[in-house]
Image 1 (cartoon, chains in turn cyan, green, blue, brown):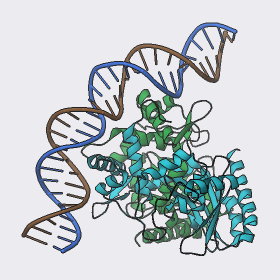
Image 2 (cartoon, chains in turn green, brown, yellow, blue):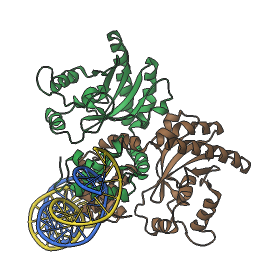
Image 3 (tube, each protein chain N blue to C red):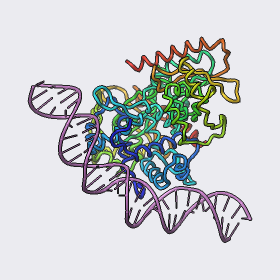
Image 4 (cartoon, chains in turn green, brown, red, blue):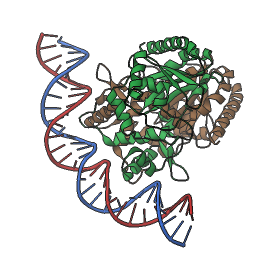
Length: 251
Length: 251
DNA sequence: GCGCGGCGATGCTAACATAGCAACATGCTC
DNA sequence: GAGCATGTTGCTATGTTAGCATCGCCGCGC
């Protein structure tokens, strides 16, 4: 829903910032331009502006990475979001199953994690360490995609603007959208089910995930090795936790 | 350090976003313009652009508050920052003193908290719930201000661009900068000491804080009721934790 | 219920902030 | 050292953006 006069500089500047914040490695200005499909000079100027604000900085090879003001933005957006604050208590009950517990959101065609913790570590250690993950390979990503329109999903994969390097599985592959085995059909099934189950490539583990509320902006999931006979119990717990989080939101 | 051609739209758009994310209450577009000293139409357009991106949304009274994409930004900036991930483990040792433990950063003339937790609650509950606090009244804010140049401090208080409403103490007051009892003299003492001690108005509590590293972008502190005789021990522990965090950063 | 004031938002158009071309300095690889 | 890719800037044209004027909406006080 674009306004009468959208500000393209702000849109593109935020794209640079979000890409930078999400990247595991520093990014050069020309590389960023290629990633986002924008003109080189323009991107350089946006990055230099972010650097002036402290939100970016250059390393010894002149590539850009997040700068000191990113800590400020993290504090502010955590406060403004309030989701982690509301979710983290109820989610602790999921540790009893002995699997990884995660809270994620959708960014373009990827899942970004607000929380991703394992019962063998304190809950506080699940913060800010998990890299982006292709949404179509992630339980949380799938449940969130399932609540997007077909057009929205098509647009995400038509020309994915950001293709960050990954050094570990899963490979970055554009999924087939159409046909019986296509992503859209899969999302329709997930939508009807109200939950998503995704295998983790190269691992015996899988993720079971549900969305928060009817129009979820975020999802929660458990990842680990569990049998089909355990799915109902896990689902019950996930839905219970999801309901608790949603109710906290409405207080 | 401004680049050759800074992008003012990006600068002002980010100011709107950061103000919105930090505010306890929704803000109208004209109010935002007054807060930031910008022209009304311009701010409306920036806010509408943020809304189109999902980073803002309007409530039933048409005022703006953070939108669903703020969760995405929170996840991304937590990942990009890495500070909470590194700090939260070492900081847990401070709970033994029985006081509030906090990790904060400086935003304009205010302290923003990445973490602010009490030993009676799990560490995971210290996240994203503490509102902005005037820096000159905050131990963490003071130690961070002490590492800014005199010109930077003067600029912060010359015409503070953002004056968010507060419904609880402390009052928003522009501190006297000059003179024996002025803020600048106080900051000089804090800089020489390497730590800051600040009373909490209307409370018997105080905050003892240190910065992380030699040029701190963030600070940690403990708040509570403690006697002067306990300061050395608390300082030792704070410095120890600060060193651990800084060392994690350099790995 | 009405009037007023403040609000959020838009169309239009001038203008100026910005974009892009060309060029330069720097860094890396062979 | 040469070649290529990189990050960056000055200059200038241009089109994105800013601001004026206006409109519809909302809340408050009488």
